[in-house]
Each structure stands twice: as structure tokens, then as C-alpha cells.
Amino acid sequence: MEYVYAALLLHKLEKEVNEANVSSVVKASGAEVNEAQVKALVAALADVNIDEAVKAAPVAVAAAAAPAAGGDAPAGGEAKAEEKPKEEGKTEEAAMEGLSSLFG
Image (tube, rainbow, N blue to C red; front, side, top):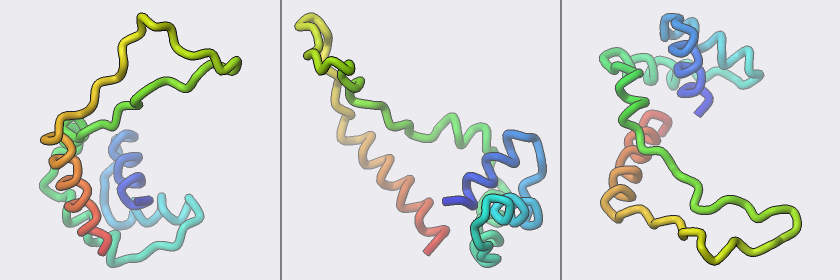
């Protein structure tokens, strides 16, 4: 996961996402660098428009806000959070499977 974060950080800072830069960011975080994973990630991102991928990525939405410190129940007029349609869950699962395949 740290490799993906490193790539996103480099992209956000408008730096080139390459093996040397990803390795440097991961090393700076204190984690050990697995060169095979770095190479796989850089190769996988070679033809990807990261801005478009981030926009298209499914985002988990918090189901409900945490109760106030007093533990009061929410007012009766508040709407309950809607559940995600099953189709979105399948899309998110497929995306996570694809991401996990990068890291064995």
C-alpha cells in the first residue's frame, strides 16, 4: 500500500512517478523497499492517467456520524444513510482485486 501512496504523493507534487522516486519516498517513510513491487507498480501506472483514475475510483462514504460526546440519540427528523447498491459493491471489489494483484 505504501507504494501506491508514494505514487499518489509524487503525482500530487507533480514529480515523475518512476522507480527511483517511488523507492526514495518509501525509504523516507521508514519502510523497506521491495524493488519487484516498485517495478510492477511503475509498469502498471505507465499508461494510466492518474487524475482520471482518482476521479473514477469508488469512494467509501461514512454511514453515519459519530454520536456527540453526551451520547444523545439523533433527532427523529434526521434521514438514515442510504445503503450502497449491490452493483457498486461489486465494482469496488473488482477494483480492490485488481489492486491487490499488483502486490501478490
